[in-house]
Image (cartoon, rainbow, N blue to C red; front, side, top):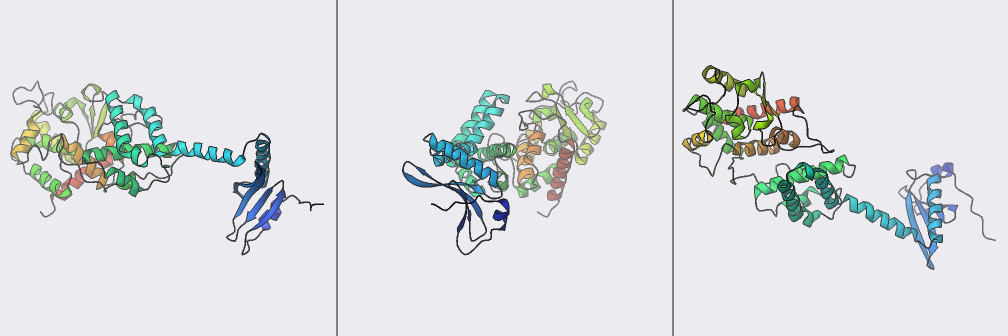
Length: 395
């Protein structure tokens, strides 16, 4: 008669010590615990299927308890009786799980969830860029397996620095969604700060090199034209709002250290709050003596009932010696975004929110206009202090 195998006990498993070779502690019915020389305790199940002797890996002890291992043994027996190979079931389940965790799967899920909150063209552009530059390169990889180097290699194939930065930010959002849904533990796209070439040229030319920015801000401080124009240029770079938002600023919108822009003047038609740094407040205090009795902070030279011309800031920059291919008022937004991200290491979502871009949480909700006001206030002061510091450095 075959020797009867006595069932295992938790005490016996706990006391089992490693030796110089693998050995098995059998529980019966093909189930056994494999004890390895390194101290590992791994559940295995031997079975026969289609005339072959096979082994199924069930898990490791104590993550998989003795009782749970026995349950898996009984499940496997039922599968075999139904002419189903337990290893085939395990493989199919693993493939299904992996498919949900690929960068491509997460990206499409993220895009599907948030795409309806964007305009149709914006949504299509995002998906097209991700598909062309990222999904074709690392889309099939598990989000936890992609390295920063592999993502950088994919991004480096993009010829336009501006598009490169936009795609990287989309990757940041995808990975943030992967983390929020429990499928990733690290945002490798965030690790690429400072690894991409700066944005230059483009529709809104921008300076993103700290040395060039130092010279520009020093030139703004030394501007000898109209004080109103000088303050407009300075506030344009300090607050990095859109030019139309700045030139139509009204005195009634300023409340202490905050500037509240109404929805009708915002591109996204959502009210926006701009924390005012001490340097911005100094400009406004100077302007209040000049334009404070009127409606607009920056009135037209022709009539106080209309705001400043849209060409005023750019014209002043040309008089300072900067061509339209070097810098524009709108380009200050790209300047701030790049330096805050890559030099000052500010959280990307804070920057995007202050730029009044469409930033949403993992549930698809738009952040309230008052979100992160303390953090954004610190960021705006940090930005202004940085500009002061670099402009005073020896040239």
